Length: 376
Image (cartoon, rainbow, N blue to C red; front, side):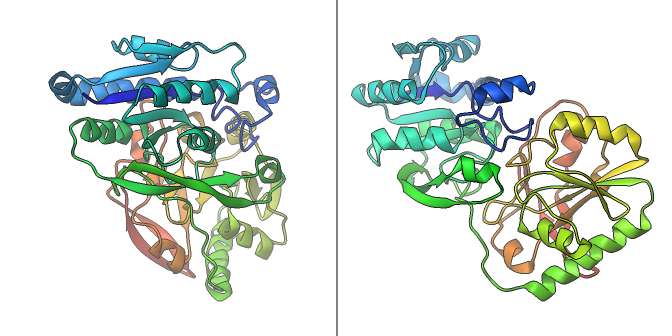
C-alpha cells in the first residue's frame, strides 16, 4: 500500500499578485496590500482532479494519506473526501518549523511520497529533512518555483500522483534551487543549488529547474526589441504590459527606459506609465486605454509564459486581453531550451483561451516568428 504525506504552506504565493515577488518574511505586508490565499485553492484543484479523473486508481490501490493539521493540509483533504491520519498539529501563525516537524513525522511513518503545496522555500525546507531518502512532488503555488520537483499545474500533478500510486513511474533527481528573495525583490536574481531531491520522472508534467541562457545574442535581442518597438509606435492609446526577464529588459534598454527586471512594468507611446505594478494597479490602468497588449518571455528550460513570477497578470487582468494581443518573445537559444510553452493560470470562463491553442507564435528576431507547441 502506497503511503503519501501531504503538507500545505498556507502563505505560499501570496506575494505574487501584489508585486512582492515572493512571500518569505513579508506575509504581513502581502496581507496589507490585499493578498488572498493561493495554496489552498490550488491544493483543492489538485484533489478535485485526482478524485474526478483518477478515482478508479484510488479505489483499486487504496493509498494511505497522512497530513499536517489545519491550516496545513487536513481540511483540504477532508473537503475532497480523503480522511488522512493527522500526524502533526501546527500552531498559528504557522512557520517553517511546522513544515519541518510535519515532514519528520512523514519520514517516521515511512511515507513513499511527500506531496506538498507551496513554492521553492517549501521545497527547500522539506528536502533539508528528507534529502534523497523519500521522493517529493510539489503542487505549484509559489511565486517563482525554479526547482525541478514541481508538477507543471495542479491538474498535471494529479496525473503524476495517480501514476505514482499505480506504480508506473520511476524516480529521477531534481534540483532544489535556493533563491535569495530579499535580493529578488530588489531585481537581483541570485540563485544557487541548495540540494538534490528524488521526484517522479514524468518529463511532460514535472518541470525542470530554471536554466539561464548565457549565449551572447545581442544582435538577435536588438532585432526582437526593434520588432516590439515598431508595434508600440504604430499602436495609439494602447497599454503595453511587460513581464519580467532579461529579454523584456532589453526592449526597455532600446526604448531608453529602466525596466524592473523581476517586476511587471507598463508602457504607452514609448513612455513609462507605471513600474513594478500589482494586480490591483493593472486593473486600475486598463480602463484608461483602448487596448492592452502583453509582452512576455517564457522561462528558460521550463517554458512558462504565465503563472511563474508574473502573477500580477492574473485571471482578472487577462479577461481584458485578447490572446492575439499577447506578444511572446525569446531568442532562438532560449526557445531551444523549452520543450513547449506552458500556462499555469485559473479563473473560470474566458481564461481557457490562453491555454486552448496547440501552437502560438514566438517573436525570435526582427519580423521573425517561430511557432511553438503549447502544452498544459
